[in-house]
Amino acid sequence: MTTPTTIDARQARSRLQELTVIDVRTPGEYAGGHIPGALNIPLDQLDRALPDIRTAAQRGEVLVVCASGARSENACRRLADAGIHTATLAGGTGAWAAQGHDLHRPEGSTNATWGMERQVRLTAGSVVLLGLALGEFVHPAFLLLSAGIAGGLVFSAVTNTCGMAAMLAKLPYNRPRKADLEATLARLRAN
Image (tube, rainbow, N blue to C red; front, side):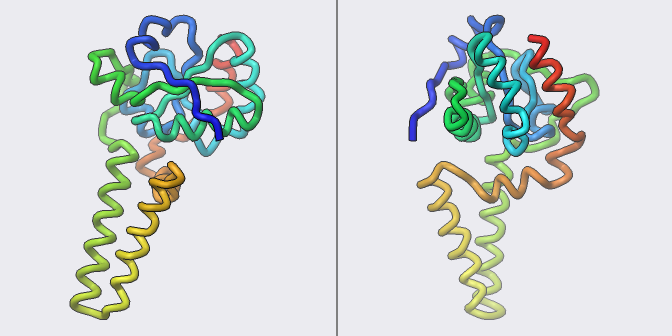
Protein backbone atom coordinates (compact mmCIF):
# COMPACT_ATOMS: atom_id res chain seq x y z
CA MET A 1 0.00 0.00 0.00
CA THR A 2 1.51 3.35 -1.04
CA THR A 3 1.50 6.43 1.11
CA PRO A 4 -0.12 9.39 -0.66
CA THR A 5 1.84 12.55 -1.37
CA THR A 6 1.04 15.19 1.25
CA ILE A 7 0.96 18.95 0.89
CA ASP A 8 0.86 21.16 3.98
CA ALA A 9 -1.64 24.01 4.35
CA ARG A 10 0.95 26.71 3.62
CA GLN A 11 1.98 25.03 0.35
CA ALA A 12 -1.64 24.41 -0.65
CA ARG A 13 -2.58 28.04 0.05
CA SER A 14 0.25 29.36 -2.14
CA ARG A 15 -0.72 26.96 -4.98
CA LEU A 16 -4.51 27.05 -4.59
CA GLN A 17 -5.11 28.54 -8.06
CA GLU A 18 -3.27 25.70 -9.78
CA LEU A 19 -4.83 22.83 -7.78
CA THR A 20 -8.11 21.04 -8.29
CA VAL A 21 -9.35 20.57 -4.71
CA ILE A 22 -11.74 17.71 -3.95
CA ASP A 23 -13.35 17.61 -0.49
CA VAL A 24 -14.43 14.05 0.40
CA ARG A 25 -16.38 14.93 3.56
CA THR A 26 -20.14 14.65 3.91
CA PRO A 27 -22.26 17.47 2.44
CA GLY A 28 -23.04 18.68 5.98
CA GLU A 29 -19.37 18.93 6.92
CA TYR A 30 -18.57 20.59 3.58
CA ALA A 31 -21.33 23.18 4.11
CA GLY A 32 -19.90 23.91 7.57
CA GLY A 33 -16.72 25.25 5.96
CA HIS A 34 -14.46 24.18 3.12
CA ILE A 35 -11.39 25.40 1.27
CA PRO A 36 -12.39 28.07 -1.26
CA GLY A 37 -13.04 26.47 -4.65
CA ALA A 38 -13.15 22.91 -3.28
CA LEU A 39 -15.54 20.52 -4.96
CA ASN A 40 -17.59 18.22 -2.73
CA ILE A 41 -17.37 14.58 -3.80
CA PRO A 42 -18.24 12.56 -0.68
CA LEU A 43 -16.04 9.54 -0.09
CA ASP A 44 -18.97 7.17 -0.63
CA GLN A 45 -19.51 8.63 -4.13
CA LEU A 46 -15.86 8.66 -5.19
CA ASP A 47 -16.15 5.66 -7.51
CA ARG A 48 -18.85 7.38 -9.60
CA ALA A 49 -16.52 10.35 -10.10
CA LEU A 50 -13.42 8.38 -11.18
CA PRO A 51 -13.51 9.26 -14.89
CA ASP A 52 -13.80 12.99 -14.19
CA ILE A 53 -11.16 12.92 -11.45
CA ARG A 54 -8.84 11.06 -13.84
CA THR A 55 -9.33 13.79 -16.45
CA ALA A 56 -8.71 16.52 -13.86
CA ALA A 57 -5.51 14.76 -12.74
CA GLN A 58 -4.29 14.68 -16.35
CA ARG A 59 -4.78 18.48 -16.56
CA GLY A 60 -3.00 19.26 -13.28
CA GLU A 61 -2.52 18.32 -9.65
CA VAL A 62 -5.53 17.14 -7.64
CA LEU A 63 -5.56 17.79 -3.90
CA VAL A 64 -7.93 15.67 -1.82
CA VAL A 65 -9.05 17.05 1.55
CA CYS A 66 -11.18 16.08 4.54
CA ALA A 67 -11.36 17.27 8.14
CA SER A 68 -8.10 15.78 9.45
CA GLY A 69 -6.46 13.93 6.58
CA ALA A 70 -7.55 10.34 7.33
CA ARG A 71 -10.43 10.12 4.84
CA SER A 72 -8.46 12.01 2.19
CA GLU A 73 -5.56 9.54 2.57
CA ASN A 74 -8.05 6.71 2.13
CA ALA A 75 -9.45 8.45 -0.97
CA CYS A 76 -5.94 8.98 -2.39
CA ARG A 77 -5.18 5.27 -1.96
CA ARG A 78 -8.43 4.32 -3.70
CA LEU A 79 -7.64 6.75 -6.51
CA ALA A 80 -4.08 5.38 -6.79
CA ASP A 81 -5.53 1.88 -7.12
CA ALA A 82 -7.49 3.26 -10.10
CA GLY A 83 -4.29 4.71 -11.58
CA ILE A 84 -4.95 8.31 -10.54
CA HIS A 85 -2.16 10.17 -8.73
CA THR A 86 -3.40 12.71 -6.17
CA ALA A 87 -2.12 14.43 -3.06
CA THR A 88 -3.70 14.93 0.34
CA LEU A 89 -3.76 18.00 2.57
CA ALA A 90 -1.76 17.23 5.72
CA GLY A 91 -4.05 17.79 8.70
CA GLY A 92 -7.06 18.51 6.48
CA THR A 93 -9.30 21.55 6.80
CA GLY A 94 -8.50 21.59 10.51
CA ALA A 95 -4.86 22.41 9.73
CA TRP A 96 -5.96 24.87 7.03
CA ALA A 97 -8.12 26.80 9.50
CA ALA A 98 -5.52 26.55 12.29
CA GLN A 99 -3.07 28.43 10.07
CA GLY A 100 -5.60 31.24 9.73
CA HIS A 101 -6.73 30.46 6.19
CA ASP A 102 -10.36 31.19 5.35
CA LEU A 103 -12.98 28.49 5.02
CA HIS A 104 -15.83 29.15 2.61
CA ARG A 105 -19.37 28.64 3.90
CA PRO A 106 -22.21 28.69 1.40
CA GLU A 107 -24.74 31.44 2.02
CA GLY A 108 -27.41 30.29 4.45
CA SER A 109 -25.34 27.40 5.81
CA THR A 110 -24.62 26.97 9.48
CA ASN A 111 -21.75 25.32 11.26
CA ALA A 112 -24.17 23.05 13.12
CA THR A 113 -22.81 19.72 11.84
CA TRP A 114 -19.97 18.36 13.94
CA GLY A 115 -16.89 16.98 12.24
CA MET A 116 -16.95 13.22 11.65
CA GLU A 117 -14.14 12.47 14.11
CA ARG A 118 -16.06 14.28 16.85
CA GLN A 119 -19.24 12.37 15.99
CA VAL A 120 -17.35 9.06 16.15
CA ARG A 121 -15.84 9.92 19.55
CA LEU A 122 -19.28 10.85 20.93
CA THR A 123 -20.96 7.74 19.55
CA ALA A 124 -18.20 5.33 20.58
CA GLY A 125 -17.96 6.82 24.08
CA SER A 126 -21.73 6.75 24.53
CA VAL A 127 -22.02 3.11 23.45
CA VAL A 128 -19.14 2.09 25.73
CA LEU A 129 -20.76 3.85 28.70
CA LEU A 130 -24.13 2.31 27.84
CA GLY A 131 -22.57 -1.16 27.67
CA LEU A 132 -20.85 -0.67 31.02
CA ALA A 133 -24.02 0.62 32.71
CA LEU A 134 -26.23 -2.13 31.28
CA GLY A 135 -23.57 -4.71 32.12
CA GLU A 136 -23.54 -3.54 35.74
CA PHE A 137 -27.26 -3.07 36.31
CA VAL A 138 -29.06 -5.33 33.81
CA HIS A 139 -26.91 -8.25 32.66
CA PRO A 140 -23.15 -8.83 32.37
CA ALA A 141 -23.56 -9.85 28.70
CA PHE A 142 -24.02 -6.16 27.85
CA LEU A 143 -20.30 -5.70 28.58
CA LEU A 144 -19.76 -7.30 25.16
CA LEU A 145 -21.15 -4.09 23.65
CA SER A 146 -18.29 -2.12 25.17
CA ALA A 147 -15.79 -4.78 24.14
CA GLY A 148 -17.12 -4.68 20.57
CA ILE A 149 -16.63 -0.92 20.35
CA ALA A 150 -13.10 -1.25 21.79
CA GLY A 151 -12.28 -3.89 19.20
CA GLY A 152 -13.72 -1.72 16.45
CA LEU A 153 -11.58 1.24 17.55
CA VAL A 154 -8.43 -0.92 17.52
CA PHE A 155 -9.32 -2.22 14.04
CA SER A 156 -10.00 1.35 12.91
CA ALA A 157 -6.60 2.52 14.12
CA VAL A 158 -4.71 -0.41 12.58
CA THR A 159 -6.41 -0.14 9.18
CA ASN A 160 -6.89 3.66 9.17
CA THR A 161 -10.54 3.13 8.23
CA CYS A 162 -13.66 3.73 10.24
CA GLY A 163 -16.84 1.75 9.76
CA MET A 164 -18.62 3.86 12.36
CA ALA A 165 -17.81 7.03 10.40
CA ALA A 166 -19.15 5.42 7.23
CA MET A 167 -22.43 4.63 9.01
CA LEU A 168 -22.70 8.06 10.66
CA ALA A 169 -22.07 9.76 7.29
CA LYS A 170 -25.37 8.33 6.05
CA LEU A 171 -27.45 9.93 8.81
CA PRO A 172 -29.77 12.77 7.75
CA TYR A 173 -28.01 15.49 9.74
CA ASN A 174 -24.80 14.75 7.85
CA ARG A 175 -26.64 15.21 4.59
CA PRO A 176 -28.69 18.39 5.06
CA ARG A 177 -28.69 18.64 1.32
CA LYS A 178 -28.01 15.86 -1.10
CA ALA A 179 -24.61 16.12 -2.68
CA ASP A 180 -25.34 17.19 -6.24
CA LEU A 181 -22.69 14.99 -7.76
CA GLU A 182 -23.70 15.78 -11.34
CA ALA A 183 -23.35 19.55 -10.75
CA THR A 184 -20.03 18.99 -8.99
CA LEU A 185 -18.75 16.81 -11.83
CA ALA A 186 -19.84 19.48 -14.35
CA ARG A 187 -17.76 22.03 -12.40
CA LEU A 188 -14.85 19.57 -12.31
CA ARG A 189 -15.04 19.11 -16.09
CA ALA A 190 -15.11 22.90 -16.60
CA ASN A 191 -11.90 23.47 -14.59
